[in-house]
Length: 195
Image 1 (cartoon, rainbow, N blue to C red):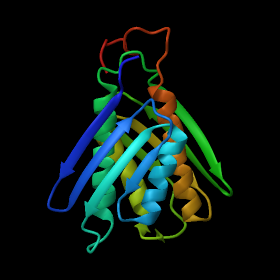
Image 2: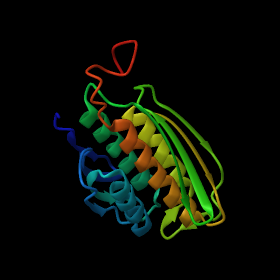
Image 3: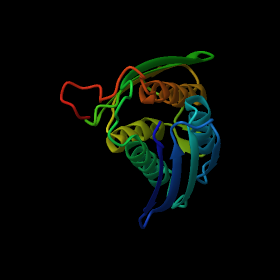
Image 4: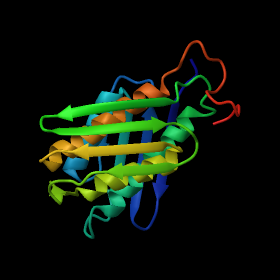
């Protein structure tokens, strides 16, 4: 199997980010974004997707969490896109439904090369820890746009912590499934011959 890893940096007036990703990892992570709950979500994403992931972010948290969450999602998305290369042999499509107590998240993904994002549901509380709940939705949009994903997500529940965590776990499991190599396939999973 080819090496499916990437190292991506992003430096703006708002954030300074370094990300490394190994799609075929063991779920090891080292995360430091300055937002404890976001770190917890990215650690969960790494664990349940079996992605080795490091994220170091120095962001303008004196303003709010928006730039940090958005730019980390952009950088992780770019890392996925880079690590997948030509996407030869990948399964491409996947869907996962993940519960966490009363909450349920549904994630459907196509590694299509055509960014599209749809989200259905409302978070039950406006913030969790130092993270605005809405930014979990925005994370998905920024990830999909920069990784070239068609991504449909849905959440329901009564506790925003559970809703967001189920969403990140569902995203991890769906991406793990979709990025797997189908040993029967030597080309890309497209009649176009390219993703």
